[in-house]
Length: 101
Image 1 (cartoon, rainbow, N blue to C red):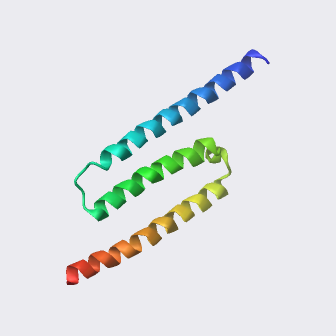
Image 2: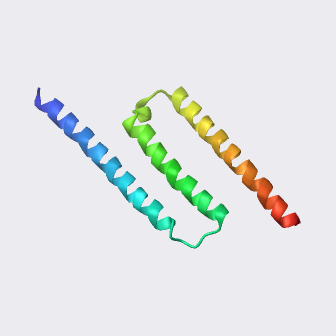
Image 3: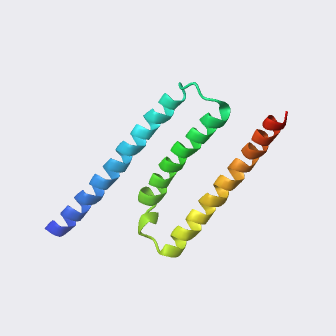
């Protein structure tokens, strides 16, 4: 192995360790958030935001999607957009019913 390869490997290891540290911190934030006095809707929203950030980190770095072509990135973002729409449609319906009643 040449010196350039060693530097490249060390830079990748550094990135993976930073992502791992970020995931560990976000896990602590998730556990801490469970102790907050939130309504069900707020708790679900907060949990989905934290899980989306963690999932994005895993997909981008550990699954190497960050270096993929733009088309794959756009398809992934479209999928995430539809996911949030489908998750929040029932919540919006529940909020409308609660305001009527």
